[in-house]
Length: 365
Image (cartoon, rainbow, N blue to C red; front, side):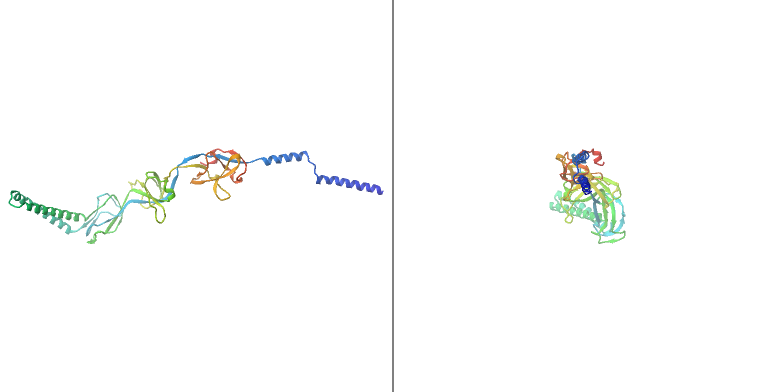
């Protein structure tokens, strides 16, 4: 009995050791070898990204900046003499043409001075004609002829001065425009009117659109270039750049630019807010999808591209124009493969599988 027990215990122990050996020292099977080969194949599979081959082209830039309209000419019409304001032939908003009578200052003394000067001229002329024959015949000295002619010239000059003083009482428009403000009323005694402001006259044709341009954008603006002006009222007008300042503002360090707009019908008011779009000099640039832009680990703006050996590299760019569906940038070489899908899931130096994507799917139009 004792020997059989020992034999039974030995068999049980051997069976336990055999079972335990399967857990601690597993044997390689066909299934495990196949699984290992599959895992190695998956490890070698590269991440797939969609790329777009870029093209560098000359892009015509446009500068859009807010400004205002401004009348080309604006002047305060003043009285050049004294008197009583007897006529005021305009009101606010009246359109006048060059030479039109605006106001009349009445003064009887000026009319009397003209009449007196005219009488003196008649007298001097008659004396000269009467004595000329006597002088020519030798009855009178020739020096008297010179004196008589000088007296007639002086009388004519006095008449011209009197007529000029009379004409100063009639105020005329210096050029065509619109009356924007009145400072006087009919009946005002104006013996001290000389130099006093009567009204403000504004010229509306042409109208100017005025903007202030920074020094960085100034070099691209050319005289004579066409510009598009959008008023805050929703109306759009076209004009040409007629003036680019060569002196910066002392406060803003910007430069004044004027766009001349035809305004024969007076539709464009003075002083209204306007947005001006002007063409700039073309630059070599690349159009890419807005979604292709990303940031590097250093915070620089750029794109990820697939370079040599299908490795990912970061290309910094500068945005020169922003549109709704795409952006124009500089810094990308001709024919670069820019990643347009999957760029946020890869890193620099990683090897990827690049799949060329048509431009229509990469760039919104």
